[in-house]
Length: 339
Ligand code: BMA
Image (cartoon, rainbow, N blue to C red):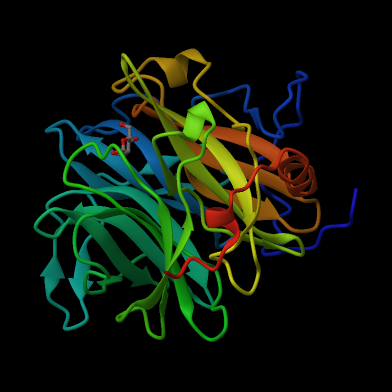
């Protein structure tokens, strides 16, 4: 296997468990799944689709808390080891750049990306319809909300962990106002996270059943010498509703709108009881990934059945090798994405 260089954290205390059973996927599930239980606090009925980063020797996360009143909001959670979490009782309080309070009507599917010394939270919230929300924090105590990056409808926003060619890069998935039956991943550039342009198409659904309806970026891309490793969700439509699986691809380092390799197989598809059965059945929804660049160990946090947070593990070099050896791309994947 080619020696792969991974850019990112040296994370000796990454949550990890070695593979216990043989499988054809480069990812395996934690034997203790799911990580969260129902009704973890008085106000929250379920926690799922959530984002985690290393912080001050432990881990901190922004969690989708589906409240008992049915409204999703963002809650902070803290953990010494990435496995055991405690959650705040109250949702995150945001202010805008003028210091005025901003309480989202709803907020879900957060992603969390560290760029230089700032952590950015991205989510789906209300802007006269579902749209992308963005806020910054350095200490997880004060949170400054940016203006809405895009007009509605748009979801699944993820930032790259560094500027590329001098610009912040944001992946997103334009959608509709409901349970969108379509969806491609697009890339947009910004000099300041306020203004976005130079939009490019990255990739759309494929001919594989598990990602034949729509796709959406999952965790923040991981920089490797073989390209940006992106985990994403793929959706299939069945007679009993949507099925959310999880797969991966490698994007060009300098022009990430170009797909280099794309795994034709999913990495995880709903198979375990906590993925197949829950508030919404058959959902594996990745939102965050921790990587130890020295050992190549990777921990992926994904939402299961819209009810729990679950964990999967892998080695970056094995995942990259798997994507390359199972790759099927189309002309639309590989082009610059500008028409
Ligand atoms: C999507 C989002 C996700 C959810 C998924 C399955 O549209 O709302 O938060 O996990 O549907 O219900």
